[in-house]
Length: 164
Ligand code: ZN
Image: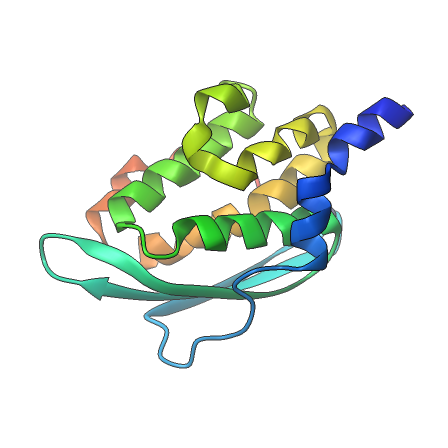
């Protein structure tokens, strides 16, 4: 791995999120919680989501995670949770799809400013083995939303093998 590639991989933003992860912990009254692992790297993300709102619009009232693993996986979980907190489920579902598109190379980060800090993970896609690390938290979020039975699950991108 070339040093310039490493530089891109471990951008300041990624390091900051991995060293000082946002939204960590567990939520006692979570609407749904789900955990997944990425056995290739040993990453684990356990996600707690509290969904509130009314019939017209459900939103992520609170979200937190517990995790272990590499800096990419933990930074991604931190970026994802802080981005999605307080947002409507429909929007969160779209953000998940956009993140996946970015990681698969279909979108460039400058086309997805709504991903915020998470756009910094675009450099990871050059390292095939690490893409799962970046996707893990987002995949867990997708499962959570799916299990809550909201309409937003229809927008889920078919990518079943992305993460175990
Ligand atoms: Zn990893």
